[in-house]
Length: 75
Image 1 (spheres, rainbow, N blue to C red):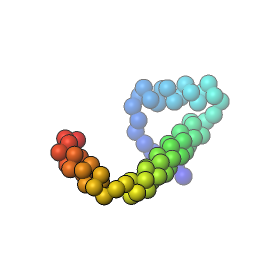
Image 2 (cartoon, rainbow, N blue to C red):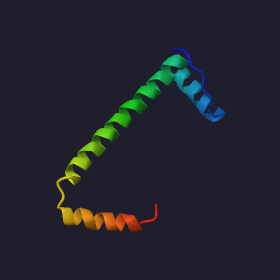
Image 3 (cartoon, rainbow, N blue to C red):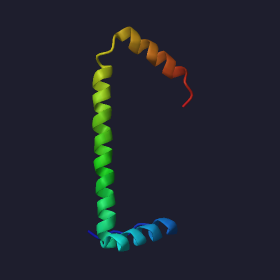
């Protein structure tokens, strides 16, 4: 599939250099980068799911105390 995106000049130039040095096309380079990002995102999601599963096993009074602390925390 063809698509058009806008990226900063410095990123484009670095990508062009990397594609040239590694002998891959620009399209292949971008596709590989997106695949890596998607895999990383999936791994993070799975890790968070594991953490949340563990949180479900925490004693209710501890959860309640944590919620109170988080409610007072400025994000």
